[in-house]
Image 1 (cartoon, rainbow, N blue to C red):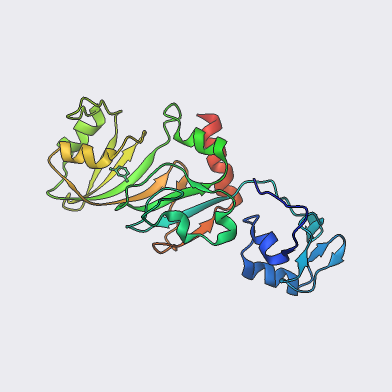
Image 2: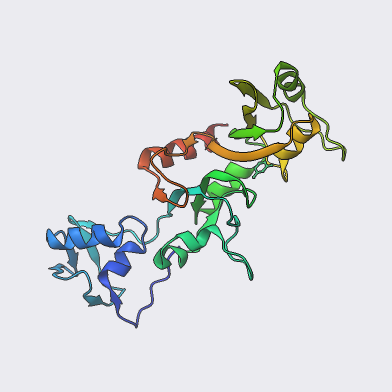
Length: 246
Ligand code: URA
């Protein structure tokens, strides 16, 4: 939740962008169109400094500083799925400062070399539910492997693999693609290095791994590695429904 200091004045564009609802560029446009008011007065410049306690409206609707922010990121390889690290860059480094300050965190982890869908939010409750082993939220990965996956691998994962260290995996999906050197893996849990360990146990070590979806949320194909966007209200609602109904 965002903290609103009573004293220091803040730029309007920064204040509105901090809600996660609009980018600074969008704020500029809203202001240009005369759609933003502070304490009833139309704001004329996006850089105008305001008391953060001012009552802000956009198109007459009060700006809600209390709601949560949800965004999907196309995680590139080479970044940690963490909020901070002393030595290495994290996925948070891809976000603008006003969003970083909101205390967003990744929902679950992808390995440093794994790419693809990462959900970031400051909604601890939704994150907790999505990650809860009881909810069994499907995660779909595209894996490139050494060798070729086949129907025997699919059957073994469907039966529930037991890994070398005794870890018993829940039944998982595997669908070989093309010649089998690529496959889709669907997990209903998220143990450490799980896809890599499962495929290694089948003698098909992972060469690269990419997450395509998590529950109802699918990586937007328009996002290049490193890019992100806010979830649509519909995507938010579908996720919420998924974890309250299952
Ligand atoms: N399984 C893995 O092995 N690595 C990931 O990053 C995600 C799932």
